[in-house]
Image 1 (cartoon, rainbow, N blue to C red):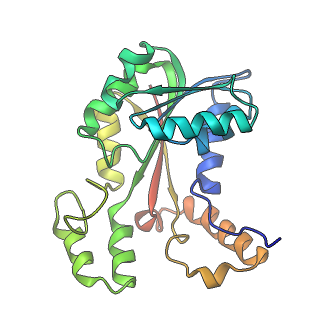
Image 2: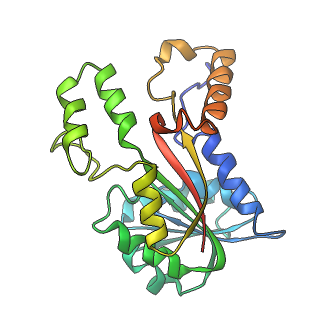
Amino acid sequence: MAKDRSRPRTSTVLWEGVQRLLAEGGEGPRSVVDLGGGTGGLAVRVAALGHQVVVVDPSPDALAALERRTVEAGLAGRVRALQGDAADLAALLGEGSADLLLCHGVLEVVDDPSAALAAAHRTLRPGGRLSLLVAQWPATVLARALAGQLTQALHVLSDPDHRWSPGDPLRRRFDRSSATALAEGAGFTVTAVEGTRTFTDVVPPASTESDAEVALLRELEGVAAQSPELLGIAGHLHLHARR
């Protein structure tokens, strides 16, 4: 059987960052909330480390798929599915109920990013951690231009929400300044900012056909994540924050 060398949705850099945030709380299992966690690709990995995870998502279909996945992984007792919206998070789970909150790819699609982060802040206990992943607009300019979509690249630059057209599936994109300001406005202290998928989304698939090439791309991503000069062109920004 041929090996599956498809690029994972959760990058190595992001996963390592999540693991560091988990470790910052000390020993023992953590209470983790995966906001907008969908079918549970990340939640199952976190639960496999021994933590308790609640996935909150508005889609009943995604949550049904999550429940099937957790059963197949033998983790049904560690992952709970809960239908709900980001702004209602604290009301659904209770204030101060979580040690770590994962908010990945959520602020780009919700009605009110500030309200979502305010609810996340209330849901975390004092000293709890936030893992915030947002799409970054400069990378979209580069990706659209490299794809030959120059009109779309220009639209990202001029549009206040940095969308490439009215048909863009995302409602908004961020950069380091805007994402940090949003987190701090909700009461968080940002402790680190890393770039993820700096090259993964623009390197041609033909360049990563072998295991060695995949390993090189991962190494390149790891180095780029810590480079201030390359942070501005990362596809996503991973903010580490503390309540």
